[in-house]
Image (cartoon, rainbow, N blue to C red):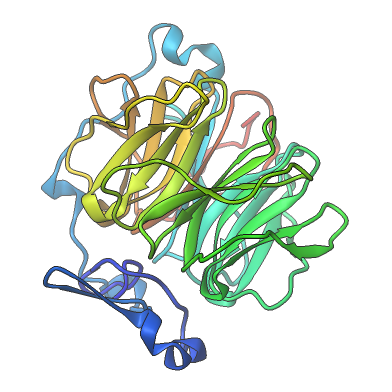
Length: 355
């Protein structure tokens, strides 16, 4: 079974409904890790009949209201988006405990990773439909022009509007320029890439190479050099990435080990550290706050999103309701935004104000 399949939630990779490519690539669909058989083929289950582990098995307190500098006035108006894989929706919550809404989308099938551009438009990897959709700040949905995607996952956006896509079942990363031209990023040996993180200042793209248990760095934007493997220790099926570009630290969801690690990627080097967390199960997407002091983690196997102080401290659970199998996260810093949205199902309507 797949990490993204609903029955049993065993780890692995992901395909979509009635995936023809799964039959064509039998060598990809099975790996043995000890006694665990990992099947790359995704078997989609009905969202309401997932038979999934509950977050209640590992309780964690709700996010408290911020009091001082680590999440000051700006963070008080930040918004966190999460792709609800089994629910076929994208949820949004004002932090720390504001209203929850559902981003208006049409016909998503197994959404995974997310990105936001400078105009507040939201990009969604609509993995089951092999496409990327864009939802503008006023709620208009369009499809990003792409060619031959197969199970797209991780997304990364440049300030100029260039979109990088982990084209997972094609074992490649593609770039769609702001003008709509698709090209393939030169890489070597990727097998089902997942999370992406872009360092624009240094013209580097980090790629979680899921099946190969590694993270690689590739040059982009005309920079020289070739692909390099990031020095890590003991990774198993890396998924989500988040980059602290200023400190040159890369956060990696080490999903096969149920942990998040912090890896130095600057010239000075340093040791890999495990971020202190409590009870993660197959962590996925990551988002780092603007102050670079708190990390949000999509705790896929526990149906929750947690907030973790990166230097140690109390883990808290972001109070999303009705969330099942969260995958991608993106954090919008505090400010004014118009993103039209509808209240989450079963929740009272709240006015949409300056989100």
